[in-house]
Length: 295
Ligand SMILES: [Mn+2]
Image (cartoon, rainbow, N blue to C red; front, side, top):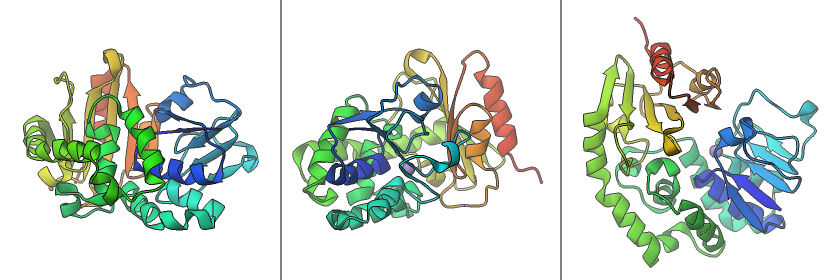
């Protein structure tokens, strides 16, 4: 079977679990929108993880809200409100083989629901550091698909802490660490604040700088929600990411629902959509207006 997921920590932990209980011979990393837009051909042997449902799949595990749902729950797998899909899979199988991954699943759960401390953002260690290193939104560059496959294999026998001591990962970790201060400067220089909203535009850059997506809530503690815009491959679309501050949880807008109005998705605290460049600026302005809290 093939796992079809997104290349983040939740996808990684989920893949590690599935390898122990299903016959997996391949992993495909995609953007969830590829399923919604029917750009990714789903096979009857696919296990969809952390991405929207497709009726062709063999199994589906997800914790996001969707407009398209399987008919009267006639699917194999599980869809429920949970902090991570890794936790859903862990509970679904209840397998003794998964016992050794309990800590990994708990940490993936905390990472995916962004329950992180300031120190874990500024100086992450262990699973949290691994989470930032693999997250495509951190901007560590190309080759992450191969890197992801390697990690799935290695995490089956080693802990994240052990892995981070190995040469290839410790090089990545130092590259990441050396960029934290630079990324903070970048955020301060390229963000605009509109009331409670911080908007960071990455579109002027040829290469997005390296840094984790939560740092903006440290550089802009006065805001409770962030908007990040950047070019998709070949400038064919504008990718927009919205997120509630993980320190100030007062934003009342369901940003996943807001993104769905623009063809995207997500959940209450985080969402993403892709916009046609010809009217992206107008739509970004509309999105910001919906996020601004008027007193
Ligand atoms: Mn997830």
